[in-house]
Length: 403
Ligand code: CTP
Image (cartoon, rainbow, N blue to C red; front, side, top):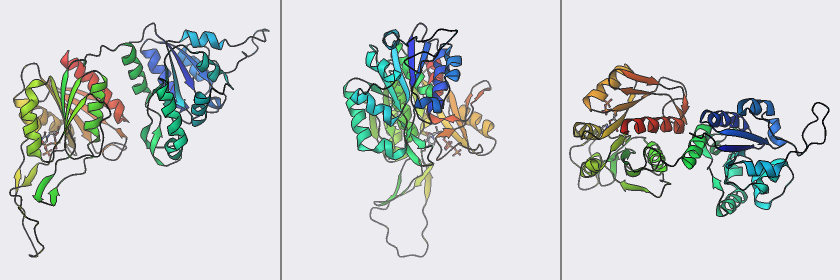
């Protein structure tokens, strides 16, 4: 909770300015005292009235306050605002304001407050793909980082221009979460040991070919980073992936096949408090791996496949009383019933059910629609949300399960 914390939210001219309304609402929900400053350009995207209603405080825009009840010529005390805040978050941060933060070009109230602020300053950039990728932007961000400003990196996804890529402002829920964690570092996951499986598995046919699947490994990596951000000791066992873990405290083991993943889990499982099994493990593998590359000779060849070990099931059946197990299920029919069967058969404590039926959910989307399925018919449906938000909700649930 953020009770008693004073958070100053700076909003600049970006289409993502609408998200600042959600951020303010979330900070208020966490108990913070919130005030907002808008740049003149931000007013084109969101009104002071929206933010003053949500923050329950007047919004600062100009150096001089508007004439009110016959009183004129009152100035907005930027020094006072800068001193008032325990944390100043600029979200969204435009490329224009970013460059001013570097040079100190003080041509609006937000900049004057920034230059007077004594508290930590955080920024959540939002730009279009090529602007975010531009060397000037990168250099500016690096400069601010070296001065101790915390950057909440922009995320991948669909951008206002229609382009796809990095540039979306971090989700308000995530920003509020990070602010909460900053002021309350004692997350219930602190010191807990979490094992995570992720990615696909590759099952060799011969030295150059394999059976695999389209899993990118992103979920495992994001989960690992998110658990580590909450102070957990994380071990990620992942199949082949291009995704990179950001948090230096995550231990990563790269494996190829289901058998390799299984033995890594078997060797380590009892050292952990919980396991999150997000890997897309191939259910079958070729019975024999050809020692040499199979030559193209016959018109038809037959591959004999045998069942792979079920890693989640092994962990569930062998778990000790203190250990908790989370699995995933992707179902296309009788979803809840099938997820409940998996929960029972694999002795999991929670199954995250993904349905392919909802628009905007499943593969290739940044959003997802999931249901948490637990014992005793406990079922929680979530609205279509950003995957990162759903992940936070899953970790909130894990905290409960471990406490
Ligand atoms: N899983 C696993 N090892 C396997 C297969 C699946 O650990 N060999 C885990 C996955 O990581 C996931 C859960 O089991 O958390 C469910 O995976 P899913 O593919 O939905 O189910 P399956 O058990 O493979 O059953 P089916 O494909 O018949 O639905």
